[in-house]
Image (tube, rainbow, N blue to C red; front, side, top):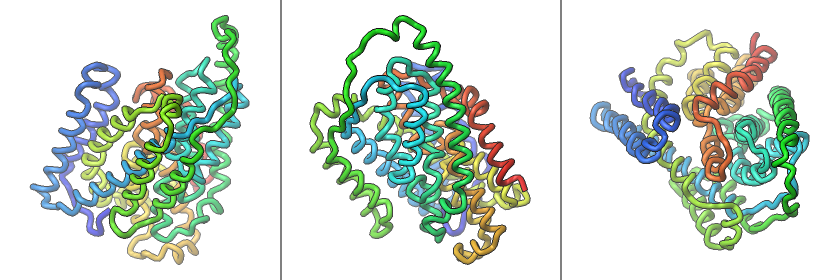
Length: 421
């Protein structure tokens, strides 16, 4: 965020609201029209916000700052998508509910090592393959809940908000050391809930004759393992801040090297193409542009929203992270919590600030799972699943059928136990 946040007109929150509404309702109500025209909708609403900042607010630096954030976001998402598409993890047989729970748990742990985006792009295709004979919407949703979001809540590598906190002085292992009980509670509750749903679904599916057909057993294998080197380059580049665009250049170079050194047969085995990435690039271009007024308005008014207790920071950061990008939302409330002081290591010696920081960190990471746009890999996972013929819920179906009845009780439990007081 800029050092001196601007005060846009509240009316300029409307393009962002309209874009969210279009993303939610367009595929549901106007499917074919939306597929043809969503670039125009995202681009048009984004142009309104950009034009307002350039010609009314006369704030070109704000636009350039957002453009840099967008390029960095797409460079990370796109490079990880490309490199992961060159790694084919062959699977054997069909997973059971218990096997699925183990897969999700290991994927959540892996997210802390290679990031939620890296883990999601690497594991979504094996996950679809393991459950290919009975794939259902809950398989996609809980993959997003755990691997694409909550799982990466222990390290700065795990999720972008925590990485931004690390860059501003939060010790690397602070979140893991202070928030691991919260992580265990949330992961445990989500895995228990998933097992309950998947066990019932497995019983129904195996009772149907069509799923008892004999299929080739397959074998466990890993092809394209050389791409792990390119994955390491991308993850290392994340920590580079200067010179400008060196980080993004390294990511692009790794992606190009991966794409041209990977055998065509591996891409074919993964059904790899760039259509899901194209959709993310276009929609998030509109989201990044239209959320500028929303974030600036939030920056100016966040301190007026409540009593700034840990409960306030948890719910405020979390709720807005579900609709806005969770990384800038984290930064906004971190600035509210620190006040004029910028010495976060010194502030962490104060128990009240430590509690606030835990609430902000957990709220940003966990609530990112509440919608498809709450965190970068969410929409990408949906796009890949759609491309491979899996059933995925709509934007509203995701929220009302899974977020409210499944994720929200977990979030409430976290608040009640750790942040209510």
